[in-house]
Length: 147
Image (cartoon, rainbow, N blue to C red; front, top):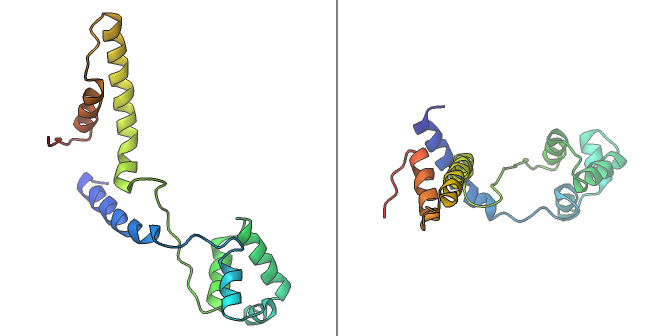
């Protein structure tokens, strides 16, 4: 993917991730059971709408709570209850742009630390190692850091 399109895609993802981070976490018993209960539906009623048994709905709820349900199954049950399934991947920390840069930053850090180690053996260790590391990462990312 061309760099400018990749950067555009990353910025679009980063805008959307802020909304996703504001969503509540999944209820401990799972979304299926929580929504079903809130709608006042029994497992049997949902099963009947799906042409399945109440026991099948119970199994779906248990599978969701144990993280072993498929998206297809959740989508099917959600549709039966008048809902859509929405899911999103969110970086554990930071942004997608930062996540995409991390491998380059890691390589730059490894290379700069190797040079600094060699310089230290020759009693020429630089005092500004962190700045050198950041400068090299920025160079590899084809950016000019504003100071």
